[in-house]
Image (cartoon, rainbow, N blue to C red; front, top):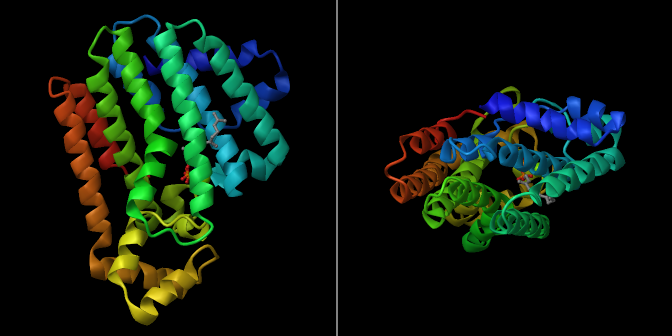
Length: 296
Ligand code: FPP
Ligand code: MG
């Protein structure tokens, strides 16, 4: 069924009827398609589920195009970002085309669905703005960080699960909560992999979050665990390129204080909570497993 989503994505991009946009879009890597997979798994019998999956994947692709401009990121999914190869202007404009095409198609759905998805995209835009503001100095507030994560990543995944349940006449609230917990766990695992994986596996430089100024959960916990000069040293590393020795030191201190395990344990708890929302859905448990066990 994912092939059907891919075919619809291609068709929607072709309908834009602008070869430069199609050519540029063809250079993007599709990624894990987590959001489309989620929709198809929750609504396997609904004929419009693949279209909703395609719409959400186009919105997600647009958000990443814009995010790479905002983060000045040169790599995305193992290849140079569009802003790196074609400049920020083209990356923004391609993002604009993709999300506005997606929203045009979304109008054909029930208002409860179109409202939920649109509302979640507003929230993810607010989350992005929070993320940028929080990166200006070392944010050590865990609650604030989790709120930003919810907005930036979990809201769209929550909405996908909620809307797919509406399509399939299932209890939308329970599925939405599953999606929220899955989305939070997904982003926390992402944050962990940024620290524990190497550049090649990640498809972007490792430890890049902290270089970009993003103090993710393991950094917040490390800050709490350190004191005196070591805490000052960590703060001094924030938001700049790191030397090899500094990278080794950060990883070593994280290992020493077990902060990665703590974040991983928290992600696991969120996954358990997600499963408790929909205990009858074995296939949704498999999606959880693929999120928590992945290496990139
Ligand atoms: C990646 O975060 C960014 C997001 C999940 C959301 C970005 C949202 C916007 C730019 C709002 C605009 C929305 C649209 C539809 C145009 P990250 O930087 O932490 O992750 P990364 O390491 O994958 O870049
Ligand atoms: Mg980014």
